[in-house]
Length: 427
Length: 142
Image 1 (tube, rainbow over the protein chains, first blue to last red):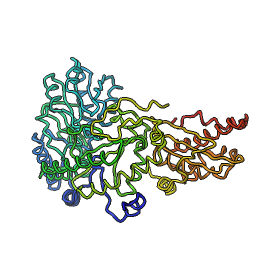
Image 2 (spheres, chains in turn red, green):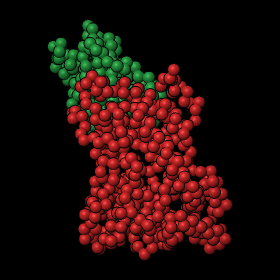
Image 3 (cartoon, rainbow over the protein chains, first blue to last red):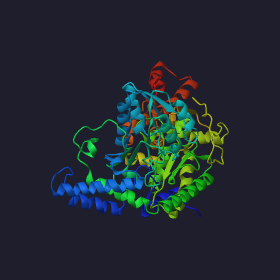
């Protein structure tokens, strides 16, 4: 006989934990932490110092920079180390906007950007810049034609992410980059979710500025990157010493830069087969979850999505309670539910793809990684129907649906491209 | 943000979850847009709450506070149940994270909403009792 939820919860502590939140952060690889510790221990010098320890540290830093530049197909002087992806986004957008404000004060972005971009845009609005927020379709795609028609004579910057962190949709950044280049508008892209997972070539994409973060590709937190096309002038965010070609003050985080370079190098080895492997696992997971749990839809684009991302909406229930039960069963996942955030609003991304709040609250994001295998997926597929069933038993919405008092927004068979027009219309 | 052991216990093993088909009073509060709905059914004999059952759409603390609220009111008179505050529910759970206090408000509201129906349908609503229903007008999210 199949095990009950209680039995599965009881057994879970004896089983290994399953980490399904790689979009949030990743566990640094052994090779990366080994290198990190050795540099911290043996090469503590300040790269700006004029003696052996300093020269050594400077050499490690520049080797890291050259390695990363090589992997991106750009020049070493186009790579700047920052503290995180958020800093890179802030610097790129604020720096470019302030440097170009003589030419105009209009910026373009999308409604599904990361808060590091959206809140930066809001900060610039307070400085008098005007921002156009492009809407996306119900799979999260930005229409390049919408970018084209939003560009005005006073537009100075477009910022569109390469892949969305919540729903995994890959944006047509190549097309958008070409439009921006033709219009002589700076193009920035937040590629934090993509680096290490898929090839990233800023030059091929006509990107002028690109943001990356170490801890999404099995490097530690506390290190990020900004790619800045040679010749493009943007203002500094951090005034200070002459580090990073005078563009970013602050003593360089040498060990973490080396660790990031190492993690990036490792990601490039077998990247194609690894992304295919994860895509196959992802697609199996998506298909099986939708088949085994009624009233379930995939969020985001079915094909144009990150290899490791699956995002579901389960009708009639709320996301935080899904996370709690999954946690007790051994899984680390995330949700776009309001209850998992300090604000009480559901995910702006799910709302932006046209989802009513009542469905957005019941979302679950599963992001797999390099250590995920078939056995984790198999185990999850046993547990997820039990979790959803338990929570639906408790849900007054599901009770109303069962009694025929409420119409389901997601049909019982669910799907990867279910369109939802309205909510329940309850007050 | 971490929950107390008691919150997790009530979430994992909710007490009195379900519906009472022949309930003497029933109250539903919250809305799906905010991400929480609580429905509270009461069985009342001689003004004593002899049974209570809930159904909740919401986060862990919404489910735990509903569960705890039913435990607190079963066996009480309706007037005693009317005096149970959201703080009492939260305290009985060894506290709630600050951003989750609105869930305890919802639990108090669910109980009161059912009691309001009971008093009104039994023609027992007095000015004194009426004064205790002010919380129903509040939005727990504010």
